Amino acid sequence: MSMIRWDPFDDLASLRESMDKLFEDVFTRRSRGQALTAWQPAVELFETDSDVVVRAELPGIDPKNVDITVTDDTLTLKGEAKTEHEERGRNYVRRELRYGSFIRTLPLPSEVKGDLAKASYKNGILEIRVPKGERAKPKSVKVEVAE
View 1 (cartoon, one colour):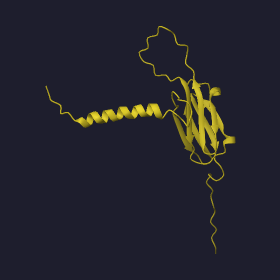
View 2: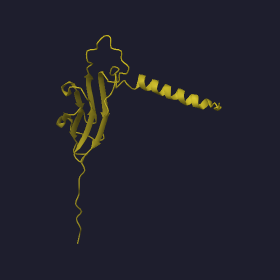
View 3: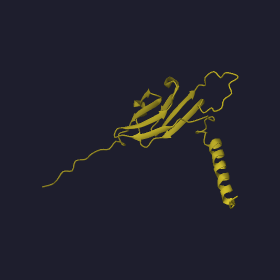
View 4: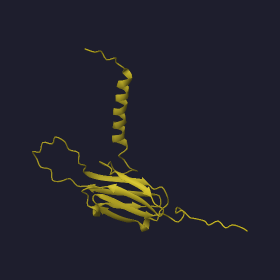
């Protein structure tokens, strides 16, 4: 039988991880005064020369039931993943599918024209393209050479 040296700091690290998870679960699910949400969809946010693009993972959710709000500097997704009719007598071994309402507010990297936003949905991915404001678009300037 081998002996393992006890290190009290290992227990503290484990305790810290548990406390971090607890605080994350309790406090980070509130979004700007909104009610507690069950989950948040995973997103990608990137820029092109003319647009800010947000892609959200929303499999199994009817895109007609997703509310998209765009301001000059934020984009908010709000909706609900409805649960299937739960049958009595099911003895779940594992249940990882997400159900319930969600809200996700993202700060945008540049000023946008929210009234010109367009959204599309394909294969469970919601894509929102919002044109950048005039100040945010890159401008090229031609240099004149004096002779």
